[in-house]
Length: 253
Picture 1: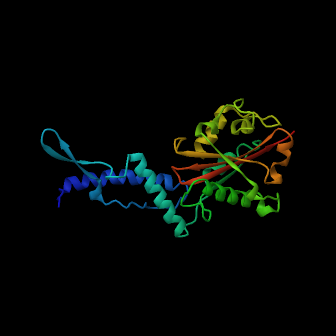
Picture 2: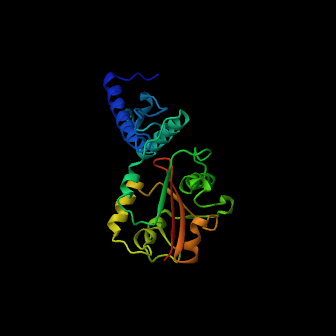
Picture 3: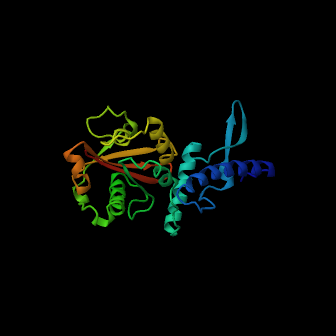
């Protein structure tokens, strides 16, 4: 059994605390009252024994064996902590995105951030996307009282993550940027506004996003757009925050 010095343990603890601090910042985007994270690795696991040719072992501090990169480790801790918060009934806070988007009253897009939906977590591919879409429909459509819907009719197609922010003229269908910037009734929003909104909506960047585009024949919400300038339904899984963002729009003149 390897015995580490107090200085080595201090160094490892400091490194681990930095990882925890970065993870907790992400967790608090969903659960503002969270005060700690779930890390299944002990302090000792943050040591690595490195063989330096031609013949000496060195002890270095780094991510635990099997944890992957620093980024991967932080994402794992965030997912484990968010799952713990959900399972213990911790109340999610109001996402700051909703305050920001209120500054853009002329946007035709409707948004729903889904952090808790029965069966959607832990994440398990497109079936989780469908469950998140169902949760968003329940909230955005007031349980069917405002717009009727039949989610069993919805079909999906996976998009490349970069397609989420494609230029307005890059698709025949109504894409997200076009829905935001070019609604039937003109607004004064610019690409800078679009980027500002999405930097808050997806604070972890685009690398960890998984995007599905859904058909728009499953709710009367989309009827006007389908008959006119286009309709849009997207679910976006954000791996860095282990949450879904649902984006819908129905554009008509």
